[in-house]
Length: 214
Ligand code: E4P
Image: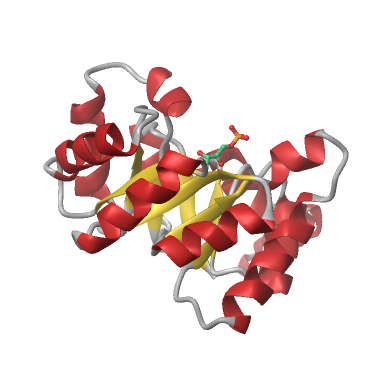
């Protein structure tokens, strides 16, 4: 499973990249609004830290506007990919980007049919928002499972990015399903490695090692 980080915060991205397991970054307008500086400069810096795909989202609601914005965003760096919402105009735009060889991430995906349409249009990635689906008391991970099955059924090359991750349990379930990518907030990346028994174990080993050294 590929690991993306779901943030536009440079410090968090640097820390995650230093782990050596980071394959990409997803941003969105909300995440970028939390950071200082011009958003294009922030994206440029992110792209210089992580060589993998960095998602930048369009805000136009018509296909032509999305494509114009996307072309502009692509000028920031070679590893920018364009995040497009799963709406009718978005599906159109994904087809247009695909014809130009521009990679896309179909975002705000809440149903298997939205994902199917996006894949059919040529999306590089589709992002089911599991946390937000859980929020409305529906198991978000079922959508990930469905999308993986559908893309395999029809040999779509579109990859599933498990998005809106809120907990280590989401990451664990995504890996069990065999999802292609998980985009994970920094806080959850930190929690992935934490285990109280590991901490207790280290404490004991170090205490015993003090006795060996005497
Ligand atoms: C994905 O690409 C989105 O940026 C993200 O996962 C949204 O998550 P949220 O529901 O925590 O805002």
